[in-house]
Length: 67
Length: 342
Image (cartoon, rainbow over all chains, first blue to last red; front, side, top):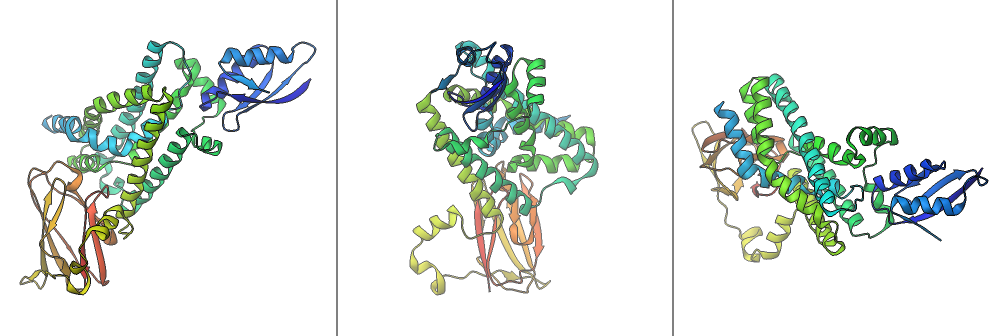
């Protein structure tokens, strides 16, 4: 299990953070997004889920991870 | 039954604009927090939904208040001091929200009302939309910042001495104010989608916030108000200080100085500008067909507040002890005036 923190752009309200969390949880990632800080803290099993999967999920929610 | 109809018409006509002036800023922050959606029609539907939730929450809290007012009475009407505090607090919140909308700095994101995750999940499961939390909360708590006309309705509810009638009066009034909120609320929400218009909306919220803080300052009897700044900038130097024309009140057979104030829709006209300290004042307030919040008359220094009839005469008796400025105003701090106590 690895823990990572990503910066997210496009979140303009608190609900946005929740949407990101929902999409990530659906693919099995433990997620805590913060609209205020503009980030998401994730924890996932790198053997089952790749970083690209995480990025795709965030994109599906409507937002983007910033490198 | 007639009373309830009057409350509804009042809301429909003057109440809506007056309330919106005070609470519109809160509505703006509530609708600026919605979930992102793709379809424009869904977007519009979401706007109406959010404003609708705001209004329903407002209806609920105000009807509850009406019930309490009819039952327990005037204990539930906020004193000018408390009102001033609430208005200043709300004004500051609105300014912070405006700064968030203008994207001045990420730190202003903390003005967003974030429900606990469990509440968000619950609301989303039940209503398909989690972002209704802010409008729900803000709509409910508008009851703490009643505009002058709402306060007149509150007194109306108290005088009914009947919880059901009190609830009916407040409820009918809020329903009357709803069309204006629905129209402006939905428009505001739509506007906030466009970046340039968001900035315009933010400026408006900033203005409302400043006006709210100013109103609060007036209600504390403070000298630092926009009205006074304006007066200081525009009054001829010859009219102030030692050279000012003093008008004093006549003394009646009870030894009281009599002062008459004509209450107009947009202000107060006093026939006296100087009072003698230590001598009781009999202040006569006359109204004629006044529907604005000027009917809610306040003297902050004594914590005195009175709702005047739309047409008629009312009296307040008090004794000024402190020399200097004695300010009076409407309960929203918009229309002001002062006496000099010597």
